[in-house]
Image 1 (tube, each protein chain N blue to C red):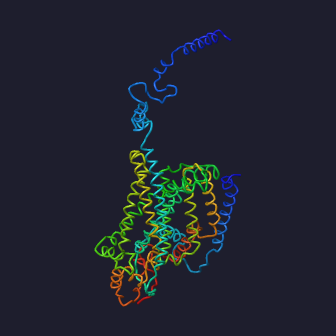
Image 2: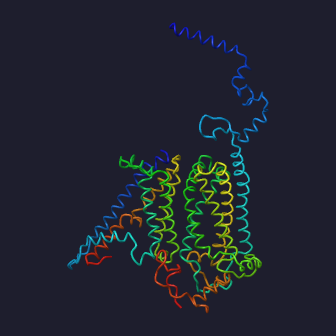
Length: 214
Length: 358
């Protein structure tokens, strides 16, 4: 068994199982906490409050624009870039078609892939640099934050280093890094990829029920 | 054998006999350039062998039936010259320059040691770099390091890495570095432009810098008066901007090689390598003096503040002005921080939160 076969075979299935089961277990744990029983009469809809919070918190508002523009811009650059790469990079579309779903879609052209990758990398570097430069961010960041950032960076980097698609070794290294990232994912703050909806929705529902727009 | 096959066989044998009877020189005249044992070219005419090959080496255009004019050039001597320069003097002397830079840093460290704050730490800090300045610095630093590592592998890897890891492994490494280098290059351009815009104000040369040079700068025994940036730091800034400009333009020429001519791309490659080696050599010194070489320097670029004594020793003119502005000339601490603001929610100037109030 070659290195690539190993990373695309047993290791891939093992990492995928840990990722799916771990993330589901974390989500189930959060949902199982449920909501506190509210005896007061609701002043407005909790559901619309949840929806409003999810949507509104995606954009900076009012007096916060000046303070938050940096991480809003860098955050969108990175996250949108990452998802575009994840779902529309040609090798990923082929992998999804061949190994996961059996269906594919039109991938990004190469030039668009490169532009999106550069924006995603720029966003990630800007976010990490802020984490180490900003006094407040530095105080509230711990090892998990840095490790999650670095694992994501390395997974993206090894993917782009294998861009020419001529080296099975480079592809195997990328697969290995992605699998390490997938194993780490459920046990770290990388879970925010799934939990952000729950946390914003929960807060929005609580406020919305009281008639407050968060 | 059928009658038709028999006739064809007889014709083939007759044709072969006729071919054998034709004189060899007649064939040579019919197909110039393919004489046995001789180089191609009609060398029996007025043109000598030497003249023929000279024209080939000078890139004389021949004739081809396809529209690509470059296909009509048998040997592109410029390519050979480019390769000889890149793999010769640039790699050789460039490699030595980096080794000399490292040895110079080591020698400076052995001579001066870690430059301490002479008066010791005062325990009071003044703001030096804003959050915006620090963010841009570290962004450029991150991208520069990625580019420097991948670029050095591409330039020197054949001589340094390949003998160690082998040809096959080096092929994979070089392949990866090329992709990474091409990817991160455009990100560097945005960083260097932002760095120029943010830092240029504090890096204009003036009479104070001339005084700093006359008194020996970092080699002087005592401390020489300086503004926020001394002459050495200003020169580094302009080298980074100038070198960054060269790297950016030549890098773009190589990223889009169909826009310039091939000779321009070759020159771009040589300039790119030369500028990169120069910048990396100076950057090594910058990294050393900003971290290991000088006590109290790094925190200016991490926390955004420096110790008052450090500031007075190394950048006294600037430090006095800052302390006057803060109205703390009597050695008081930073004024109370305003509410969080600026990029990332920190203070407007990026100074640390919660610094003790006066």
